[in-house]
Amino acid sequence: SGLTACAMLEQTGDIKEGETVLITAAAGGAGHFAVQFAKLAGCTVIGTCGSEEKVKALEALGCDHVINYKSQDVAAEIKRLAPNGLDAVLEGVGGKMLQTALDNLTPEGRLLQIGYISEYPHNPDAATESSKNDVVASELF
Image (tube, rainbow, N blue to C red; front, side):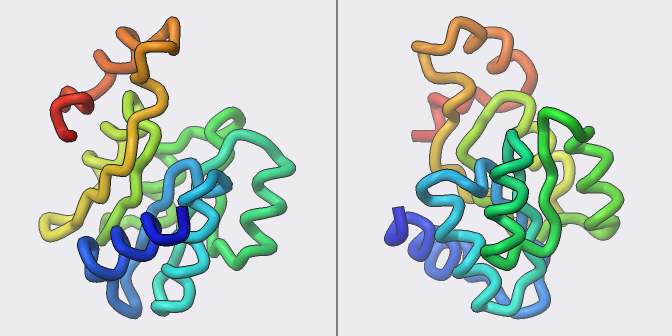
């Protein structure tokens, strides 16, 4: 998880000091490492998660802004927190979250797709989630 986060942000994403980075599923395996790597690089970090316990954990890791997707409107919060757009997104959720990320990337923004858990076949709502974005996530890999 740590190597995935490091390689995606530093090598593939080439994040730079002063950039705004969104990390979806930020309290997860790769996500919590990504929060720390992005902060060490001098980025403003926005993380998403699904519980108040995870919000607190992400705040303790140094996440600048945390969005609880179960109680907040992710798209509206991103627009508020990053009105000029996102420079990089480490995205592992897929579905609606992927589309929200794409909608908020700057013209030169980088999408770093590391998964699409909401669209995995074991999820009974996978087809519904897949229909919420303009990308067929399974074709990205």
